[in-house]
Image (cartoon, rainbow, N blue to C red; front, side, top):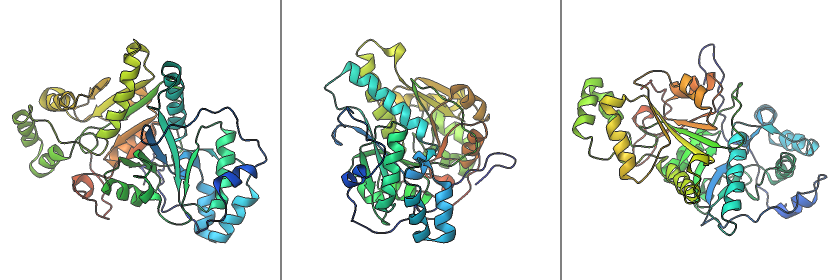
Length: 368
């Protein structure tokens, strides 16, 4: 998917692989030439952590390897990976986000040494176990703290998300993202983009769209069916009725839970997590309901930007978030054009997605 004269956004099909149970993860670690980093902190128990599932192809840039698989087949792909086992992958679109999660964990461990309320990143991939050698090598090369792998050898990893208590799943495969959303798991499609803006090393910044992302698509449906004036009337009449939750509400809730741990230590103004609402809603005409909804959920948002239909790119360029979630490809492509790592949430009427399920139809979304 691409924006004319803008960046090319690439969302590939399934990560490949072949089924094999021959190589345990610990054996893979022992076969690497680089030594495995020592003195790492103990990972939290999954039931206590905020678990972020990332696919290998969003954490690292595997475009060349994916092309080999698609053009030459599985055996040549595996051969190439083995031959380049000690050559680390370059960072992918989720890399800076994961590094920011680790920076937050460092601060949390300083304040709460015994707490397991931390981010825990799980690498979710259906790659062959042989590829795990190169992935571990790359993780050690970039000094990432990722101890949990799920390499399913050709099968979809989606079934394991609930077992890992996953709070957010990021993948390059739109079909897997839909499958995760159908299971009630917050998920979004990430894209390989040519330009990525430099972001903060010390503060995690997460930006959300409102309707069909944090909130349900109720109001979006009114707008699509009856136009802007009826939308404003509907929002005014229901401004004291909270919107139902959208697919990313739980992730915002998890971020807020960690923020309060910093607030409890008097670090509100030095919190390493900052959240943003970036919405096309108008403040005076439809912003009240959005803010009252967040308040009814007991959630705070650090900054709320009501753009009244203006492009989101310039605001995102100023914010420089590690990740931005939107249900409209129009806004995702606009964000990518200025170097923001933007994720598509395929939920809501804009893509033929109902609240209870998601169909297989790809629909180009219009701006809202």
